[in-house]
Length: 442
Picture 1 (tube, rainbow, N blue to C red):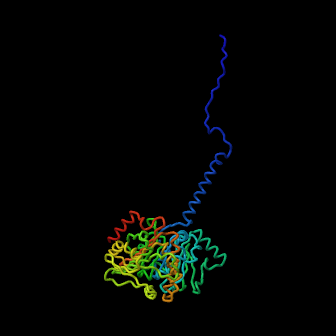
Picture 2: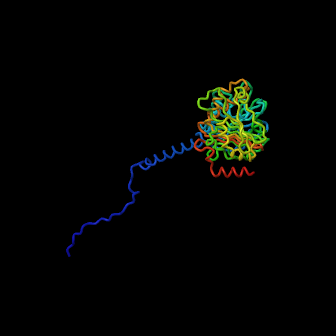
């Protein structure tokens, strides 16, 4: 039998892709860009979270700055969490060092300058506390630095023989002080005989567990009660300062619709003051246009300009609207009478002093007053300083905020609110209005 030539067949065995050799290092080169990108993103996120200026509220903790803040050895104290972030974020929104100093002077708790020029040199830190007695004879500060920052400061102080950085005796405005380190916490005490900042012997930290951008405990002041505590915080898109005693919230009157830059309501029985926009072409020496109002039977509200108006022969007109008597010129009376309903609503609350203002027109009027009325001999030096501080503060804030309110209730509570330009007091959220209703019913 003859053999048949058949084509030769070869069996093909499938191979795994892994069996094929790849050029050496090729997979690793493909992964490197992703590893680098992930590392860069992680580094950027770390820097933004821990170092970049931003609002980062926190409550005092049980470290040396927290102990200094609650210590009964000092009447007044200030606590700032993450100061290198919060203070720079506040400065970007109008509250830089000079503005904060002006606000403290207006509140009657500061005579000179404290924070101006000192906020740009803060190293990264978890917390910062300052404390002093009411006389200013004793002072203490404590800063809990980030670990790397603490090591760098101590090393630089040792190499440069700088007692402010390495520790040792120093001077503050000619007064002796002592700088010391405790772990990564830097502290200074004046006079040195006062020793290290004491542990808390007064208010417990449990009373200060509400997170805030800045917390202040004041011993005395023009608008505060002894030992009250204030928190600076953001809520509902606005910035507010609230005292520990305050529960009062009121719906703000619509000053823009009434074309009134400023409204103040004080006292019981109630009295009110309207500051009106100056007429076109008003000079620096023109007196401010005001309208006063009082409940029937209440005494009149005496103003520093009343005597000047009498001397120049400008006699105000008195009119009655509802339960109020208004005193002013004819155009001003027309504007003020449109706010009778607001005055009645405010009178029904337990408000002791209320101040509502639109920042842009108020800042312009205060600048005019600071240039003109601030030089009038009938005003004392402290009154002229308050006018300049108020004008300076309003000018700083008007670029970022639309309006402001200051509320003091009869129980000693204080609330200060700033509405950003994008909103204003009429753009309150449902949560804010509900909170206001609950507070007013307390």
